[in-house]
Image (cartoon, rainbow, N blue to C red; front, side, top):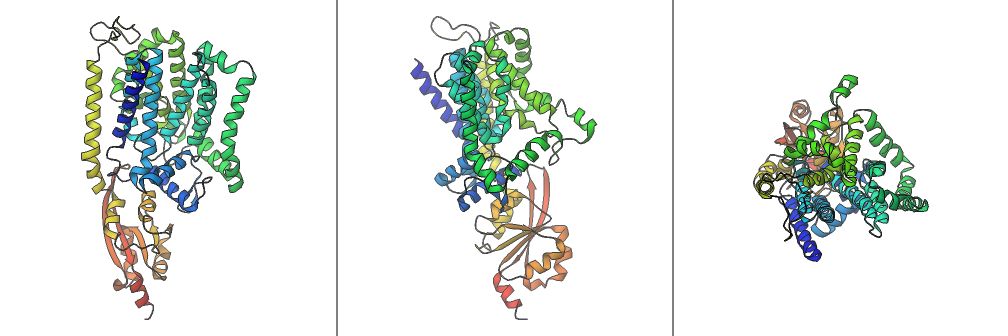
Length: 503
């Protein structure tokens, strides 16, 4: 029976992965993070440097290298495209669902496992991040594996203790120290798990050494190669500074702004976990009244409260920061899922014939509705969005002009998607120049392409003889920012430059 359930669960994970992959080849990389990760992967392959990531020819210290390694492997299989760099996130999301299905089945039965897997997979935040070229899903998978392995140690599963420490190491390589938060939840874990993990004393010491050794295998070469900058900037700026101050406008400045944003995650979870957040008040109420006394439910609740508490105190805020505990929320909702007829939950024992004493009709309606929404968005909305993305509109207009030796620059308009898009053919990097240097830069030898906002064109064109350049207008809509941009590409091919140099 277990083997049959395992096969069905594996098929479910494959189906979830395919769902997350749907339409990823038709949607250009959006926001600022996706193209940064994708371009860093491209440059890692070009440089054959697997230790230190680069973006646009400069160090990129924002995240450790696991996501770049995964994307590089995917690019080797699928080619250098949007689908390839997003594929690892889809796989990690599907593997997280697989872990939840196995965890729930061992804990409360197959119904709880499948519910938890689907609740996690079919919600708004996972819809976005399971198809995004970012580091969140690998970290969510590692976080979930660590929590699961800790519970399994109390169930007497061999090697689960080692899996806990390895998962923490992989989580750090995915997104840094935040992946080690399960360590703080150990006091709330079931007593059998705590004993198996922490006794005798040498067991946690050995586990911590294994964890640190895996991290050090990459971290020491990275520190040596960058003269320690990966620690001072990667940890100092992107972890410490992000905790005590606002970065990239993600928050509200001042003490008043800090106080105002304290309830952000309590409110935003109802959007991020939609549509299952409709059942969240019932789940929270049940957990507080009765479920928190059960060891595993206490542990799951502690993980949720820990992550929400930490990111509530952090100054820089983005609503997806609490994504690591969405698998735990999925398990909590699945365990408390109500039966409209009997008001039973999945804590109920199965019927004699093995059928769970719960009604699945309402659950299936919600799951199918969200699946339909996902497919409609992937095959109908994504292509429409692609037609209005500035970088893709720009590419369609200038692709015939671009050669490998084309020099690239931007004036004022700085979007990482331009680097990813233009370097499909150009081998150079995208320079950022000042307006006073634009005329001189365009006059230099070789084919040149300058991207500027329409307001800057009027000041530049009178200084450049019209026969020398071609002005290509580009109007598009930035999805992540929700605004329209008006750009002009000033293109000067090598032939015209050569003719002008004889004057």
